[in-house]
Amino acid sequence: QAQTDQIIKNLQRENAMIATAWYDLTSRLQSNHVVLQRRHDAPKSWLNKQRQMVNGEQPLCC
Image 1 (cartoon, rainbow, N blue to C red):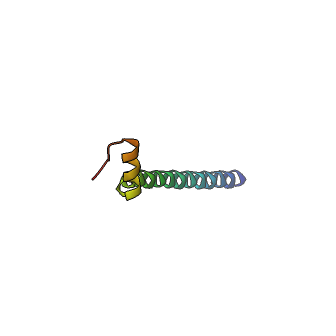
Image 2: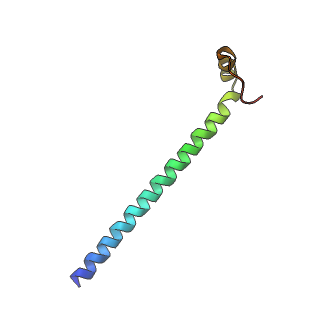
Image 3: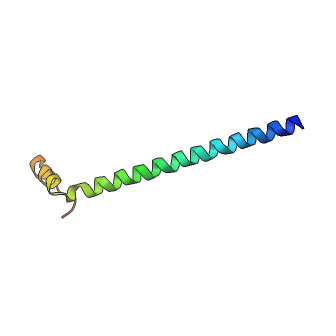
């Protein structure tokens, strides 16, 4: 009985660790996606367009 309880406790701990790792991974992926979206939207602002012109860069969008 004690051995079965220990196995159950270990499995519960392992499941909690997997759930935490999964949550962390999806949070990082979502955060990276938001950063990439911001990078794409950045040239649309007037200030960033001016920076691109001063630096001699081609604008990414209109």
